[in-house]
Image (cartoon, one colour):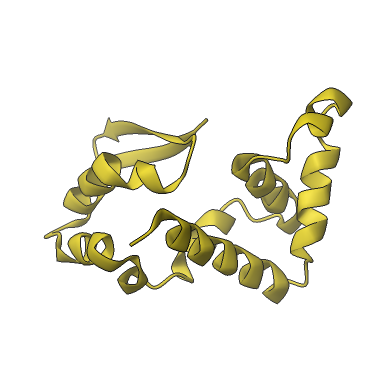
Length: 125
């Protein structure tokens, strides 16, 4: 499945979730641009990370990204989604994601920390 299609699915889920909460997605982007210093905002549009952080602040829900992800059917990810669904347990799915999933979000890196009860996965920039 093309990378652009996966991004379009994520953008649609983000848009739909914000609208269901009564927030205009364009306002989130404008607010994210407004949080930047004037030199930075004039040079480029806000990054995905900046927009998501702004949305979390506006909504007041630190689990917003997970709720957006819940709105995306894994089967729409094509072969990659099938591979994730075929994993025998969540740990195997996380390993698969860490190996291949980073290609779906440009300029992102995932930091993994193991602890006694499992795994912590954090999005870094």
